[in-house]
Length: 445
Image: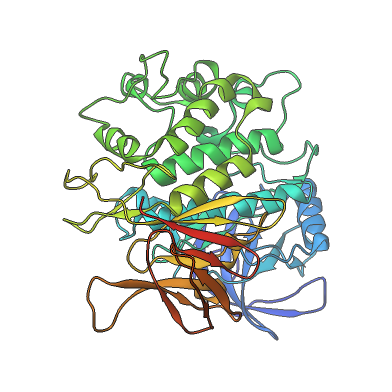
């Protein structure tokens, strides 16, 4: 071990818990992270470099610990750990990051195998995680690719490095990472300070990179820069920011050779996402109050996630426009996509409508039946229904009841039946279902 703390070092957290250093896990811009042993099991300890162990940062960490923000999407500081020597050094305890969560740099370098569905799920969960933070009056201020980890199989996310979050309006601490900072912060405009409005810009940059594998402001202009120093970055991200797909100005469009990836990923995105990105990186670059809100991102991402279609020829997943009657062609093989039946769900008051494409193994979850779900959850724990193929009749599908309550199904001829938990109702166009409060109907397209 070559870090600041030696293996076997004993520390005591402010809450009285004993902490023994095991080994170093890694290092970042502010400090080092260690695996430690505590009475409650192995944990992680972030220990600050002397240059970062300021009284202001100490106050921020203590306040975050006192807030006791209990959310499984965050590795939140749980205990303040001072130096036994009383030299001003300090750190904090947090949970260990499970191995299934991977960093976004591995995604951008194409070292991870994942799917459009998992990426959309990760984007949705990321939006909701920061929305939960903002709803408690906390601004993150350093949203970037380095602070989000995701499971490439499920899309589950984990937000790390939460020690820069502060109460909205607090001017202490950092302003963020240049590539993700709002233009007004990059320029240093009078009165501009990091907060939830600048977080919305950073969040949109992160979503664009997650789904498009490219930065929204890095087009031809970046390629013309011979030395990407701080002055050049300030022009690119603050003084002269220009969206690579700005419909009114093509001066920063992607280079078709050097930046071809984003041309393909953008073409594969449906208008429901393209429109929000375009608004945020045109109007939103210059009008902070006009930036896309978390609720807008959440609705769009969920709708597109539920409209995923599998290509009948190559099997690749494709994003389609929600409730569209045509799907276009596959981004991978160019074959015409075939839209599967669509399940329209109308929730109880306040009335909301959801659309779920009934692709093979399509699923309906509890959040689909709720008017305003506080959190979306696509895990098996919230499963309500699943599309299943008949065991002896290939090509015949039905909707299996995986809930704990019975449904009522009404066919197009007016006849009805009860579908008990565990039973399956044959899938037919015109079928209407009472899912215990929410009403659903099957449409051919």
